[in-house]
Image 1 (cartoon, rainbow, N blue to C red):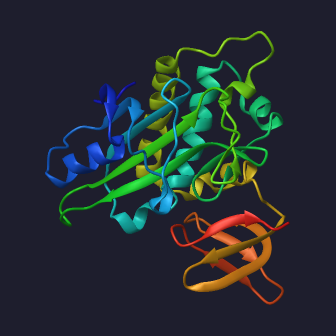
Image 2 (cartoon, rainbow, N blue to C red):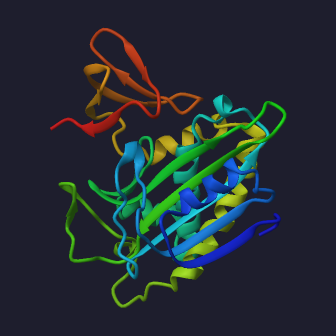
Length: 261
């Protein structure tokens, strides 16, 4: 790593996101921080959901990074994080993107990592800007299933793990090695994102889109639902759905995307 990152490891905490958010609110963050926990008692998912993670079969960590942009200029960050995870897995597992793509790895907008229709990881973005003169500190929480567990589903959703990317007989690398490779990938990605925004990543993210060209629907508390054809993302990372009458733009944080069956 080239930056002045602080690396922290703890056996147990409530939530690594909560830990770093608390420091941001109290003005204690100075340099970028990556915090890894062996066990989270109250792991967090998107929209108030619980992130279930077995201590020995998962990787749970958060990163706090200061951006020279306002929070409104950081749309697409969760999508960028998914690409960083792919880069980190390639390095940690000594593989490449075509192989992971062939194995079924996909990104589900806006923050899920999938193998086929099963989820093996998730991303949670929190943070903000205390004053207009200060950087925007964003906390990126990442949870990844390392190995298969006895749980086949969580909240009725099928789950997967990254050991499914290994060839028969191969051993999963040490979790800390995987973590360090992920942090290295995040460092590069976050710096480039801060300098150039999300637009340069649109084409690459679309290559990993789990639902590109498929019939989908979205459901929000404010709408009865939108049905149409998944049509990729725009330069800000918003999802595009082509309905019979128009192309609709769906913004992160207000929808749940599912393939229509």
